Length: 120
Image (cartoon, rainbow, N blue to C red; front, side, top):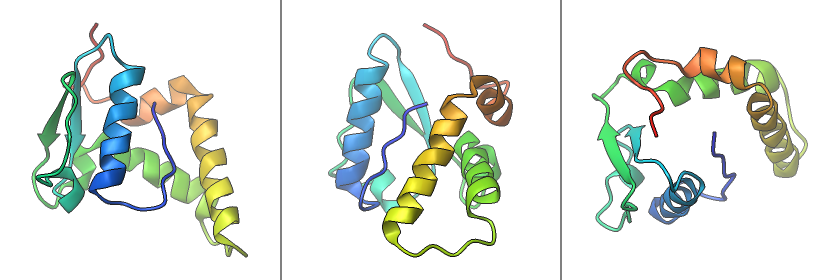
C-alpha cells in the first residue's frame, strides 16, 4: 500500500501520488481504480507509463477497495473523537495507515476483490 498525506486534494497532489506509486511499483503495470473526482480526470493529470486509471461507475463507492480502507480508518481512529489541532488529525491518520501497512493480511482481507489481483 502506498500512502501520502498531502495538504490538498487536487490535480497537483494526484500527480505526486501517481508518480510515487509508479516509482514504488516500477516492475508492475498498475490498473488503479478511481472515482469521478475532478482531480482524477483533469486535463493536467500526468499518468505514468506503468499506470492506467479505471473509472468506476458514478455513485458506487462500494466498488472501490480503498473505500474499505477509509472506513476502517474512520471507525478505528476517528470515531467520536475531537482533535485539538490539524497536526493531531494528521498524526492519527498516519498511525492508522501505518497500522494497516503493518498488518498486510488484514489489509488484504478488506481490499481483496476477485477481479483485482496483483500480477508481475
